[in-house]
Image 1: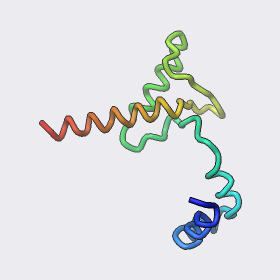
Image 2: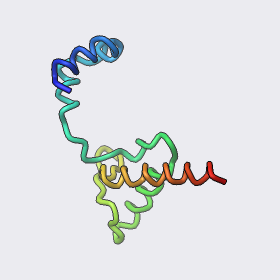
Image 3: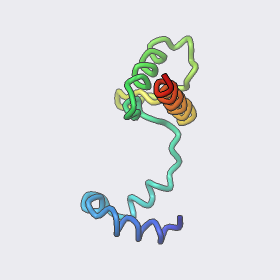
Image 4: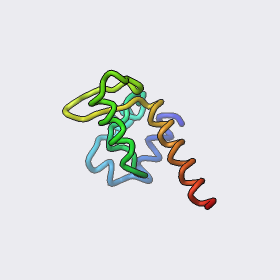
Length: 97
């Protein structure tokens, strides 16, 4: 999607967002690569947050590179994709029972 198309989409579909954020700021933010995912980002479960907190408290097993900022724990986008895949598999398995 081009910047022009994105601008038109935001203006047409997300007027409430524009009320609190300038369009140019939204465009710039959307161009940034997401490299860390906050511990409270998973809307499907609380496992992502509890796993990150557990791994952070046990730093000897650095399975997921963690970043701390303003007392928040972050995991990598790769680890979050894996977590979401596991959630989907769990969901599919529970529906088959």
